Image (cartoon, rainbow, N blue to C red):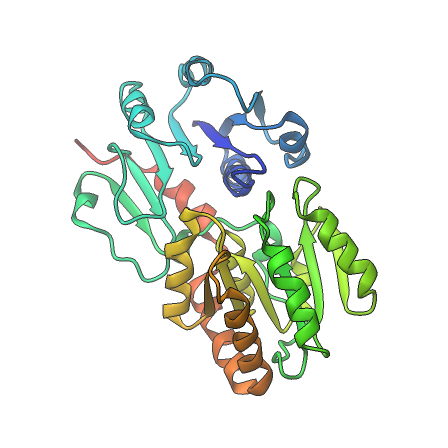
Length: 341
């Protein structure tokens, strides 16, 4: 079967959509599919995130008109059996255009509603029940459908140590702009907790990179900075807890059983952050520009430092929700017939 995947990636959107499509393409190839990718974003940053052998790839300039993207996509759909659309700009015009192409398609949402009538819909938010509209769209809901990079398919090699015994904090705010999160949170936490060590992972595209570089110079024994590391799993597994934005990283942390503090940087992260907190896996810090976000972060770290049982309780929740097989489940769903209209 032939699969076309469309994704957008840029500092202002992050690169989670692109990374997810990359993993789905690799998974489909392992199952014998032929893949074609149409990706919008800065050419150098997009190319750097694609492994060799990923399949046919076209990269569209980030500012190209939408009609040009549709023209390029239409030519790929002439040879497609299935389509995956994964980007933050899917609006009513996009949905109507896709419906007119006649190719069964899948998309992702972070809400309990969606635009258009995709044949398959993925929502990985914890604790969400499929709504009634799933009679016409096949809904793949819950963390079991989270698409994780291959390195997160296996548990940590070393046993988990609670944060009270291992006060090392893993920090990342995604693959794009951190929207000032590093500047708002990291200096305050370093000042307030003298025993705290921090590993920060970020990218060259982050406008807050220079601030983190300065902190690494000011706190050489307590803050280690990693820019575009080839793997994150080994770094995460060294931590007793994490501080992250509410994107795909939350599911990677859950799979490894690392308790985390989650802060919302953009709208599509908010409901997910709340859901992880309600499940008991995470501390929800709210929006990054909330007046008391630093106080919430400090209170959460204090709770974890004060109680090993608190860390162990949260550590047990994540792996029961996320097992790393989401990409396989999605491609298996695409191998079935689409729902009848």
